[in-house]
Length: 273
Image 1 (cartoon, rainbow, N blue to C red):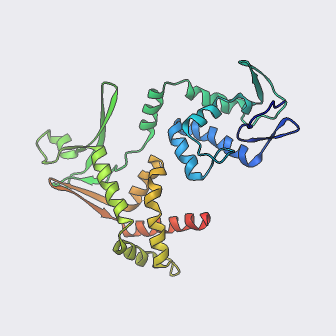
Image 2: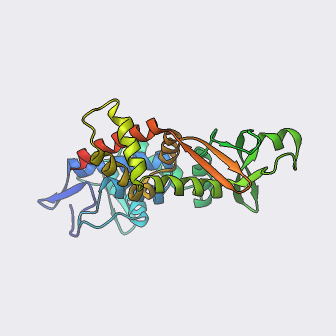
Image 3: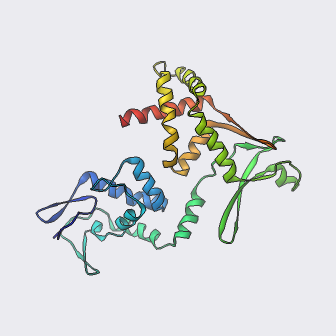
């Protein structure tokens, strides 16, 4: 029997018993499945915010709330009293095999989980950077003192050694930040929007310039809520190549990619409305 208080997300109280709330319980199952997939409470909190999922009181779900959910044995049909678990009168929301998978991840150290998440994240600019001599750059990394350092290294340097290219190796984070800054600026430039609209109209004459502008401008504030894999997908869609020189870099865009992304965002905006 439920002894009072706010019931866990996924349940409601009737006659002092926990009854499954189908809409909320679906979100709980998604939380467990998503955590098993990515192993990160921080990223999961951002994903929930993007989906508009909140607590029963309408508060934003943070990492602490997520870890309480993942450790709440109510979800496997148990009741906990003074540290002991008993079979409850309510139905389980989470299957035991799902619970076990989530807790196998929870038993790992946060550092190990973070390292595994980074290892599973695709290189943001893979196959896109080229040096002043026309040679491609390849992603690589090294570890020092337990920290991961990522770089892009010229194929010329890899084949002929240091000094064979005026720009031989650059920190991946710096290049990625520069490219992302340019992309996000593109979403706010009227002339780029106009070009995108013209390209999009080739496949959809009903796609207005206002729709193109609204679709792209909504992506800039949404960017920080997206997962690294989605960042990589969008960069691959939008960027044809990145030319790296001694004085900076030039990002060459795919107009058809911009048009495709604008169409994607238009669908998202329409569904949200």
